[in-house]
Image 1 (cartoon, one colour):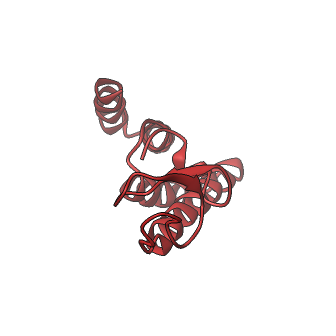
Image 2 (spheres, rainbow, N blue to C red; image 1 turned 135 degrees about the vertical axis):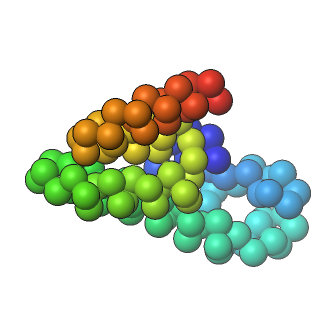
Length: 109
């Protein structure tokens, strides 16, 4: 997934991984009828993880934020998720993990 794609599970467009058709988010591809339900659920879970992480950070629940950031990065290892996880590492005082993740993410972009 590209940067920010986890922010669009309910709106915007997606490209069918089977036939490449670009369409609005739905559970079935309009062209090849491929089941896109799992892809949609993963995107929705990634969005929920990002939201929970940010909410936990606002209330200084750093370990909860880090858990959600790790889950988000596992679901959608894009630049945005990597940066959020790096911030959580910083908040936990794990400087080496934060800088390593930030460098890796910057090299991928």
